[in-house]
Length: 375
Ligand code: FNR
Image 1 (cartoon, rainbow, N blue to C red):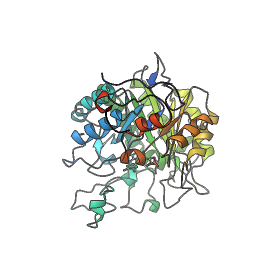
Image 2 (image 1 turned 90 degrees about the vertical axis):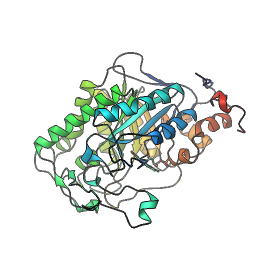
Image 3 (image 1 turned 90 degrees about the horizontal axis):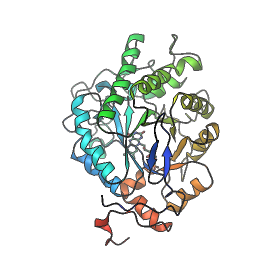
């Protein structure tokens, strides 16, 4: 392996371990995380990852990330945001992910995948500029292969084709899908799974009182609205190896009165911690038009709140508007989070961590092939 380990000279570049239920935990060489970012690149429309995912994720592993998380991978075909999404609902997909996880690890990073179901926000064209330019936005038409979407309860807040409420039987089947996806992620060699409970997608559609108007055991009270997520986590933990790490991404706040608020998130995070979840990434929003703060580090207070509600060994990451090495170091030094997720800045620069290491005086972690580069 041609990767030099980074010296622990800064907080970001101090290795960290995400605890597991058994074994040593998942050691990360540093505290930078590539968050999941949909690539909308599966032109075969079969959810099978391609050389794009290998090169995209592989280049970020080369770039020095501690944990590289593959984009939202659908646990069921109807859970895809678009038909260009990747999936993890069948064996062909699991087999295709394997060389990708092996390559990520060969470059010294841990390999993660986000398990996802878009619910009412599925069956869209995806969010590619080239499609928007020709008017292909929003819900896929039937002629373009659109499908009936599913949700907690119908809501106009999604501004997409109407979704229908899952029956209790369909909810049970869906929980089984999440667990089967986790098993396939294990077979594919992933070290880490992140459950996508954010951004207005299916789990969030159950959590938020704005979109969950059910009157059965999956709606109404806090206990009922969180039941689908609790069942998913329990089903996943029953099949996911004890010595592998599990994380979750929340929308920490809907940013509107009457929505899912940060107090709900801290309460849920504490509950999931007791079940065995140890990594928490704090995003926000995604339901309806409601927008929160923006600008540098705009979601850090959410991470800080969750960190404050959990035992010390939880790995809480901040995401959103983190672009600069010194800014990122500051977030960790001031104990606002345990790690930083770098999204758009890393799309522009897959070598973001290696460059940050240089800037912060840690030793160059770049692959030996790049040492003669101008850093
Ligand atoms: C995203 N984001 C995202 N989030 C998620 O949970 N699953 C996903 O698959 C995606 N897909 C995605 C695609 C693209 C192109 C972008 C730019 C973003 C959100 C992303 O992970 C991150 O939370 C935000 O981009 C905010 O962080 P930055 O970009 O400010 O560092």
